[in-house]
Amino acid sequence: MAETILFVLMAMGALVGAVTIVAARNPVYSAMGLLGTLFSVAVLYVLQLAHLVAAVQVIVYAGAVLTLFLFVIMLIGVDKSEDWDEKLPYQRAFVGGLGGLIVLFAGALTVFGNFDWVPAATNTIPEATNGTIQAIAELLFTDWVLAFEATALLLTIAAAGAIGLAHHRTGQT
Image 1 (tube, rainbow, N blue to C red):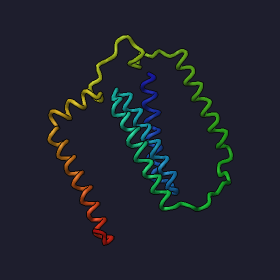
Image 2: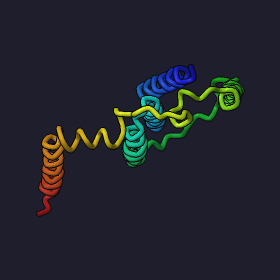
Image 3: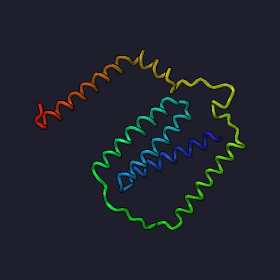
Image 4: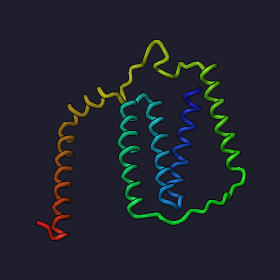
């Protein structure tokens, strides 16, 4: 039951973040919506016992790519002043109440919950095959090794070509 509730909450979080990405007028707010979506998807990966994929999701996408997006946004410049007038008068009270409910729910789940849905809390840990390092590495370095090496070669050639084009356009040799 708790796994279903967590799935629904994270799915709603991912959808709210995706709508924020598209609907926000400020690019920084769009980037924060992207961050929420990426973290929600990482939790969904953990629910599927794909811990490596979840870690890669957080480190690579939520960490590196989002940082790159924010640096680009800062370089472009969004130096307009913000309107600090509150448009929703009860927003702070609503968010405070919602935060309190979430804390109460987490506390009740911790005290009274049955954690059979958490693999580490049970005596028998199920065999996870869809996101472990061993499962990914075995496929990557046996069945897909040629495609993996070809992709690495193509990315190296593309990077060298981009550097060559950048130097050619500026007139450098």
